[in-house]
Each structure stands twice: as structure tokens, then as C-alpha cells.
Length: 152
Image 1 (cartoon, rainbow, N blue to C red):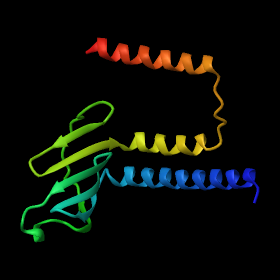
Image 2 (image 1 turned 45 degrees about the horizontal axis):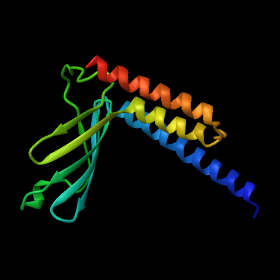
Image 3 (image 1 turned 180 degrees about the horizontal axis):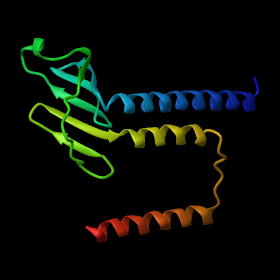
Image 4 (image 1 turned 180 degrees about the vertical axis):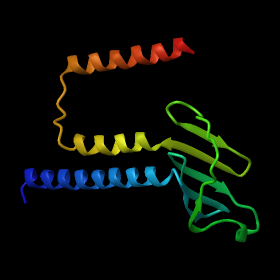
């Protein structure tokens, strides 16, 4: 097979997988308004790796498990959310939860949808930069980081 044909097949595969991930994130985003879905996998050394979908956020967590493994979920669990007023934790929706036995990194679904859609588009974009373009991009990133630092 020639190289151009292989690159085209890889692009098609990346696009298909990215768009499927985008649709999955949208479905989980809608479902997260009514249900908490979680999947936990045991890790070596009394730890567990979990993926949780709740309140418009997808979360990945690592849990330190105690000596009684029967009190922890392994596999899939779904629970209906109680009807309460939720406060907005942060505007963008990113936050890190650290507790005594678990740490969660929460990412909003809008970001995951945007990221998977961008991955589908980037597979078909030509990436040829000149030195001038790279210097302009580096300068813009530096100015953006400087603005963030000065605003705090």
C-alpha cells in the first residue's frame, strides 16, 4: 500500500473514533442531569480507578481502598440524582476534589465534546508552519500566560 492511502485510512479512523466519542459525551452529558453513573476498576495495591458522570461533569478518580473490599464498587453503578438546587462550583466547570480516600479530577462535558470534535477536524488539517508563524504563536501564548498571572 502506498503511504498516501495509509494516511487517508488513519485520518478516516481518527475522525470516526473522535465523532463517536463526541456523540458518547453528548449522551452522557444529557444523562448526567438525572443520574450518577460510575464505573470502577480495581488496581493493584488496594486502589481503584473510577470514571464518574454526574452534574454535567465527567470525572476520573483514584480511590484508596481499606481492608474491607466489599464496601467498594467494582464495575458499573447508576443512581438517580436527588432533586436539589445545585450551586455552580466554578464557571468553566474544572475542579479537583481531594478527600481522605479519593481524588477526583472533574472536567465539564462541554470541554470533552469540544476536544473530541477538534480531534476530528485536526485529522484533516495540514500542519505546515513557517518559523514566523511559530514565533507569533509562541508570543501569543506568552502574552496570554502573562495576563493570567497578572490577573491573580
